[in-house]
Image 1: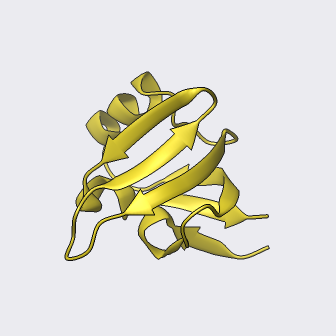
Image 2: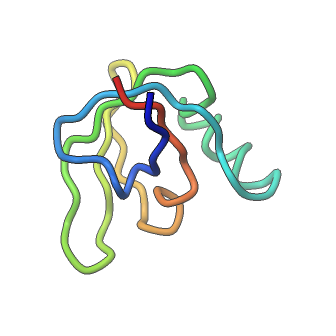
Image 3: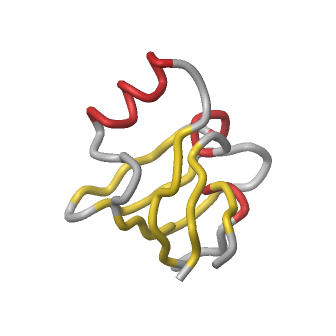
Length: 77
């Protein structure tokens, strides 16, 4: 299995969150949104030039900034 960040994933690609890089506040924020290690995640879209990354976690659709998305590491299926 290959580990990449959300930014590096292709559109409509699925994976499982492996880890969240960064400090405690970022990890707490991501977990409050439902993004935590072990959760299934699907990348829906990514806007060019460091735009937001849209992902689906469970039944929730989120738009994450490029900086946050680059710190979420995913194991691809």
